[in-house]
Length: 414
Image (cartoon, rainbow, N blue to C red; front, side, top):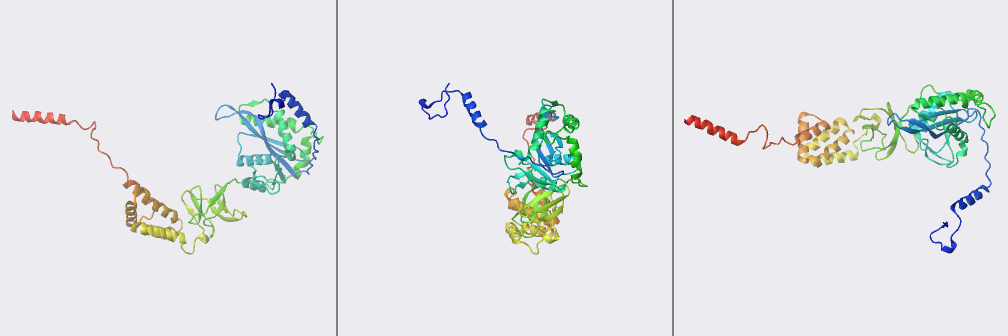
């Protein structure tokens, strides 16, 4: 069948050759291009390592019971070509960092520079001159004394050593392999690494990998005493009470940040507020339980903010008892009460102003200056009453009572 290169071509312009002829012609044209020379990157011992992901073997997933393709993480030292290969089912910023830590422990030190691709776990925004490194990954490397150096986009030759290490494992020990669990697969890969990959004569250096690694290992930086503490991060807005919310707890920001956004890092112990432009530490707080506030003394306003004054005035206009209760709540709890006052004012949409005012009056009478008291009072007072059923198995029919009365009356007359 003739091969046509466009719908608008006339029949006289049709190409009579086959599709395979076009492919052969394209291959010849591509082969005539002069290849560019690639410089050999020589690094000093302990100077550089390259990291990358590749496709791993099939391993049975313990959750589904089916074979699942794994991810192969490879770290290659630039001088000795010593590799650390690790398997994982999933990938995330934390898993990416934990794989680095495991690799550092296996080689017994850390290099000064980590060359990587522009994958999301390591680089948020690729740029040749000023890439945005993932904050967690950046801090992890800083903890181990290393810095990240992302490659140019679509330029994998800069990390050709690790690319070769990935392909070598895929084509040699892992080709066509299936494993029943991840531990078995990792043990198999480690045995191959020790017996074959480390003892081979490298094609470029013409030396044994394990011998070159023994020469490079003293040049690696020592491992820190403590492991890296992983954290979560994100951006938060500073609300009217001067606090940011992190997992339903509230932490104060410095004065002047209301309405602005800050970067937040948190782990199981601490919450840190950072300037989004400079990265400067603004505040560090201990973690709190849900619903609690932590406000430093220097962050408490010297006078009531205008927004809070307006909120209290709105509460006074809504209802007499509502205004009195909100004023008392703010006097006792300070700025953390702002959110609770907003919650009390929102109740009138569901329960009406009269019932909310009644609930606040009850709270004032009992001196229960608590948002939860008002909420429970409204919820319980507004529960639907128990309905009386006209027909119930316990209620006998009226005809039975009529017959009983007639029978007893007849016996009395007789």
